[in-house]
Image (cartoon, rainbow, N blue to C red; front, side, top):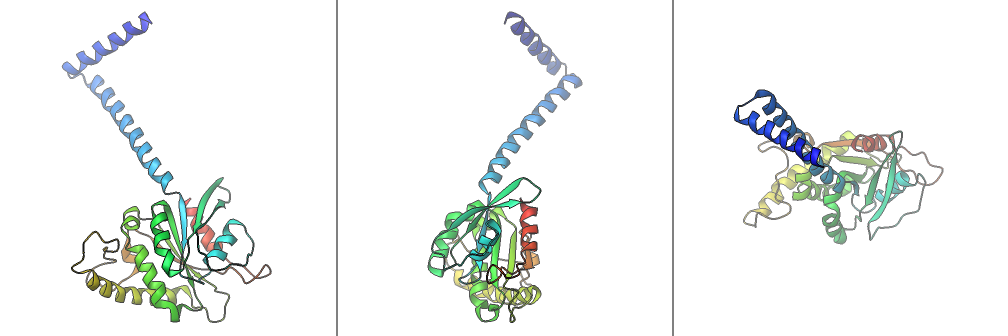
Amino acid sequence: MANMANTMEEVVAYVTDGIEKQDPTVIGILVGILVVFVSVVLMIIFGRSSNKRSGVLVLGICDAGKTLLFNRLVNGNYKQTYTSMATNSNYFNIPNKNKRLRMLDLPGYERIRGPNLDENKSLARGIIYVVDSSTIQKEIKEVAGYLYTILSDGTISHNRPPVLIACNKQDLTLAKGSKVIRAQLEKEMNTLRVTRGAALQGQDNTSNNNSYLGKRNKDFEFGDLSPISVEFVECSCGKDDTSKVNLDEVKNWLETIA
């Protein structure tokens, strides 16, 4: 113990003397130690933040096929689903990565989807927004309205989780392709940006949905939401256990955010 104390005293004396004489060697060592210390602190801070945002939210309006997609991902099989009234939670295993993602299937019923989103939005490492490709034309207002609410939410716009628009039910005859759905959503979101912006005038700026989406003086495009990344893929979950399932692009996206 005495030897250790003497050694520490010698080190302190050496460092103090080096600082007084502005010895470049001593100063370089101190700077290096400071850089390492700051790096460790930042890693701890950002690591905790990342751990908190460890869930993938599966969102969409009623009958979009969210829960079946959720079941296909976490269980790999078909399961008869009904309108969800509570959040479903399970894990998706990432092939060849020894990782897994927590999947959260939130209710799409209009009266309860808002509170459920508020409860879970801070957990979002990523968001899968499921769209029924066969009914998008008649449901475009509700589909775009909920998507606008999600993207303009203060917590989500701050955390900037990547978003995947899953154009589901591509196996149905009337299904629209992802490019058509993207164009229809952009057109409707452009209209919503005007109407919701007007409705917010005069209201308290602390409103959850007061973020302006896209670029001003330009028609809305998903590509203008940077740094939030929005991708579109086509998928199908099948009607039963014998149906063909196509979730490859969804799984590939999940692998990129794991």
